[in-house]
Length: 396
Image 1 (cartoon, rainbow, N blue to C red):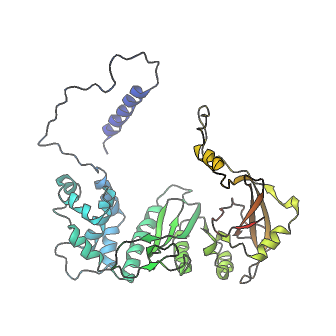
Image 2: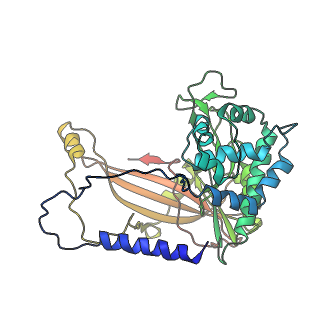
Image 3: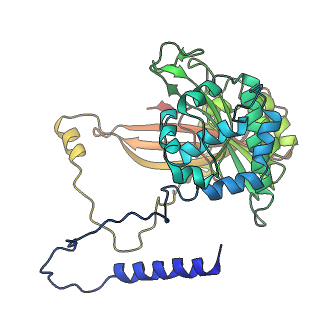
């Protein structure tokens, strides 16, 4: 980048800042939008593209060696007439970066001369050819492509500033991807009554990158087969991270693997089902063990607080005499707990949420989350609890 470019960009920002700066306005005789004679001209030499950063993205892909890695390890085409495997993969990826949402949008990229010039490509695959390429993938090919991406990620992480990923958080969860198609192989009916798939997502929370994605039928449980992919993600991130913490809801508390993760120096914050044993332990705690949980505000008010709008929904609830339940407070307690399949104790946090309904009856919800501890029972690292949405019980 030329030094003059930075000066041009800085001057543009300064001009916009001056135009948008607050000032005491007087009553204006004319509307602010007052353009009356706008002329459009088409230049023969100067051309533009809406996704101007596509060339820079392709240069980064080249420098990371991703193109060579894909062509070397992903063998889906016997001959290249004229496209290679990397051309197909990057064609789909660049379509998303340029604002496309489906394969059909690739045709807009094909008809954009400036887009093709930005990639120095004579042509790119059309939507039909791209769809045919995706149908060539098997399960092993999908995994190999993900590993190609992860090797490029690893190369990028290693050149980041010192302190990058000093404390890495790996999130694991399942979701539902619904489909209206009737000829989709592997679909299933989820517990919500939605036909589709139940993909497993293992992501790096620090950078919001999806490290691994495992597609499964819609009737699979969210934790099914997740241990293998958690271990893969931990091994990948552990090459550059100082510490690695695994996070998940109650479905991902694989108690048979907690000792192994703890011995490997991994931390975890996982939800725990509110089964009778842990509920009994929580209720047996003395009152002094519970402390009021003060949550941080969602955002900081930089100016004066605004007056809250009238709650019309609450007014209707009162008029219709619906049951109106409000949160009164949250209390937090910690204790040592040893799951049946574990050989050591871990720190178990319990969050009791007390609420009151319109008729003054009080209810209490309990949530539990388990975290790694040292063999002596003391916490290795004190962390804020990530409370799951599942595993909640109520007692009146």
